[in-house]
Each structure stands twice: as structure tokens, then as C-alpha cells.
Length: 116
Image 1 (spheres, helix red, strand yellow):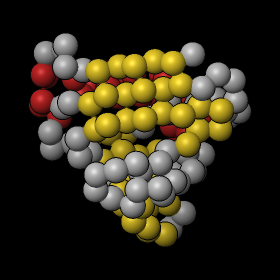
Image 2: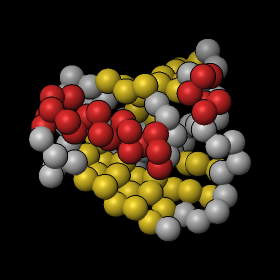
Image 3: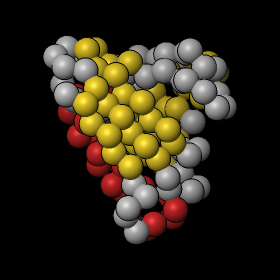
């Protein structure tokens, strides 16, 4: 199965909430915020049958967080990868440590984290 989702067809004020809902349903639930929320633009591609899934998000700058409560709502079985593929870097706070992920970096989605 493969899903492609864009928000450009939606009114600007509905885009950020919609991408949060779609990301939670197709990828993992996250708390999200962005200074660009009023006119957010993104493309989300999710693919991979069975226990391995890959999601590609081309997003505007944002902050995303995974709390223990949100993690417990997600299916624990599939392997889900998050990888910085281009553009700027991503700063992640996870397990009491902070790292800057440049393209090619990948954190775990099964532990609490804050990404920006």
C-alpha cells in the first residue's frame, strides 16, 4: 500500500490540523506546532506493507513531539523509520540527550522525543 497526501487543495487555515490527523493515522501520533501553521504546506508519502513502513514528509519548519501517552496509542509491531533526507537539519531531544540529525540521520519512533 502507498499513500500520497498533499494539503494545497485545503483552505490554508485547515492544513496544519489535517496533516496532524493524517500523520497520526498513517504514521505515528505526534504533538505538532509550527510558526507557519496558518498556511502550512507539505507532502506526505507513506508506503510499505506489513511490518516495515517508510514515510517521506516534505514539510515546512515545525516542532514535533512523541510522548509516552502518544507512543502507547500507536501499533507497537511495525518498524517505522524517520530519516532526514535533505534541506536543513533536525534537532532531536531523546532519552536525555540532544543530537543534530543531518541528512541520513534516523531516530527511534518508539521512545519519547522532541524534534525541531
